[in-house]
Length: 204
Image (cartoon, rainbow, N blue to C red; front, side, top):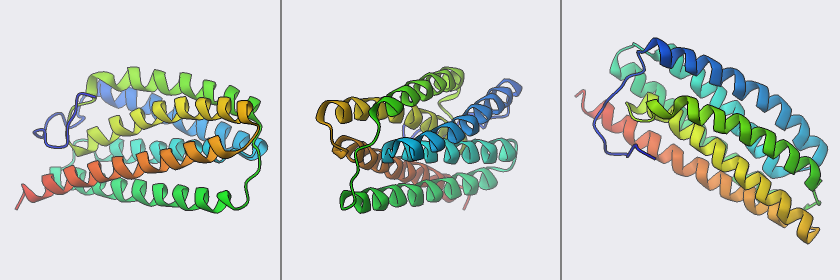
């Protein structure tokens, strides 16, 4: 990943090509949210539903990012802060629901997990490639890149969970991956919040 928490404030997203790329990626994320949420319920996979929530959160995140492009730095930084907080809450929710499922564990359907996970991986790799050239920038732009990266990592993890469920015949690999994804959400949220706070402090 080319961006770091402490880099200088850079590209603010005000490029028509970036806007068009963002619109395309928004459509991909909302479509895959619907597909994965339905498949997650059918298969009983906590990891698949966690990844579906990640798609939904990213779709909202990208929409907010698109709206605040060209606005004052303070507005973009506040938007990034709000996205970071929402990502943190989502991570905590996934972590809590995963802990809950530890006590009510059911074996999910590995075949559905694997097939949908692979479909989602293709969608996310496409999104990452589309956004790759804009991975450095201010907190608003960077939050887009972090969410895209999370998606791709999450889908690889879902596919590994499917293999684990298939190989062991238990739901533990699914819960393990859901827990790891929750930690990834929380970590990314911390990075976004930290950078947006830094940008807000530079304006005082």
